[in-house]
Image (tube, rainbow, N blue to C red):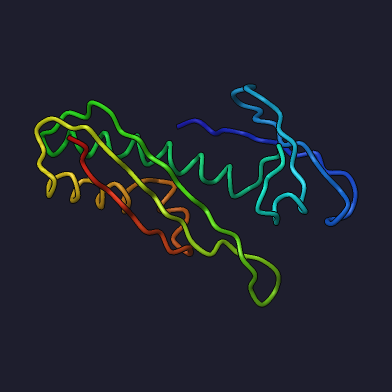
Length: 145
């Protein structure tokens, strides 16, 4: 299986410095990061580790859920997955305080209960979910008509 790479170049102190994170494997972009904007409500045009984790988690979960739905005999027509990753203080600095995955799906061949079971299974078996077992992950899953 492949290995993917990202690289960050950082200049300055935590409070006054800034950096750029480069998605090296895909070469799709370089994005600004800074701690003051990371800790602010408004990201102000910069990304953060939490946003990048949210991107990784939502995309991984969508892939895993599509596989689980197929294994259960359904056919996913569309899945809309959002991951919200929260940052907060702890005893020694900061930590991820929670992740909420919200998924809405249009699926043939599964009823609401079958979709809910598939969604929970995907939450438990998604590789990113497995990597983030130290963080509480909540799930809000529903079929759309």
